[in-house]
Image (cartoon, rainbow over all chains, first blue to last red; front, top):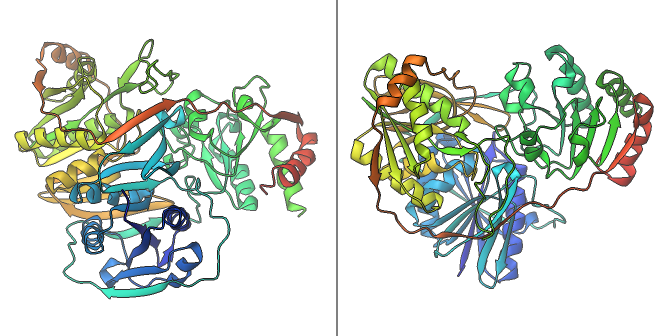
Length: 320
Length: 248
């Protein structure tokens, strides 16, 4: 029985993450369907446009503020979040399935004696109990699970829950300065990969495989990604060859992604790669081999040489 | 110092997944099992740490008899001893973490390594749950790790970058690809591992509260169309992406 929802909103550099808006919207829809109270909490120093959370359906957000909290600290953030959830008697807590969300959901579950279900791709009420679906084996199978405990913590996979319409409502922002932080574990610096969108969060991904032939040829992949505002991805083979960083790897030992558009260039489609990208909404495959397994998943395919097709595609898109 | 490395025995990533007739589990017939890929980085980091600061490495696995293969692999790579926590039933993440945490308490180990996720159920939270149950510090998805006395400096992967972290023992570290290059087991290591006894322990299981209703395969995607060949197909592809798919 759910009586009170709490959404943990994630910020980086004082900006609310897009995946958090997805969780706010999903949470507010679930809460509204059962007439259940919902509020949000965010931890950090200065945060921009916090009142905009209202547009996504939550009317009250508490900002736990301290300059030491600008950077993430697992120990400080989890202690504050546990205490806040207890203070407002939240029994159902939603987070994003991000690096931060996956770190904070477990201590919440342990200290609140809660069930924990992560990486949900659907979450709906069946009578009064929430039922979740989550991919396992990198998406080769889907499990439907539910918890029989009173308190529960869920993390939602980014890029799956659509935001849809937003209103012009503003949320009430309550800023509480907090002290006596537990900084036993703290981030001392953050290194951003230069101008890089992360594959797990991108709307469009342009991925290259062995068909790109050499590390230096990924300039074409990057150029196309730049034009489309896309993230770059890679198959395991080219990551293992050292052509691309592991953070780009899509597949069972990399990231499982579900962008609106996935463009696979020179990727034949090993089963462990297909598992990681098959839930993309539209898939384009460009490959020399017309029998490549990737074409079995592709909505649109071009049989051809990447070094002819990519420059043509880049030119065509530059016309806009 | 006692170092525990947790290892799991999982279907090879090249394997096809079939659902059992009960619609609640994976059919293990014909499936090849391997050491969870991320756990190989955990084993390597445990061995490197032992080589740097001394102590012993204990490999720990929860599951049935077949998990012994993975424990032998850890022994062959250089782990000093191995423990199998025997369980034939499938547990939820919390029950799994509680069983592992209880054994770590038994061992009085202050540094724990494991893969950042197991490539079967993909929950990627066991390390964080164990750390929280034991009140240990956590570095999840680590791509760099350094121990100096009790102090830890580490890096972890986040969306679009890396965080540098300072913390201290006791700690749980979950390994991401890139943390190190796992060594191959030497012939001598393999021979020694064969002679070692894997300690088997019955565990007191706590109840699982997250219940599997069903497990199924995702809907098969219907293959779309080949737009054409070579660069001449590009204008039509762009038109389809704009007008039909409406994604650019």
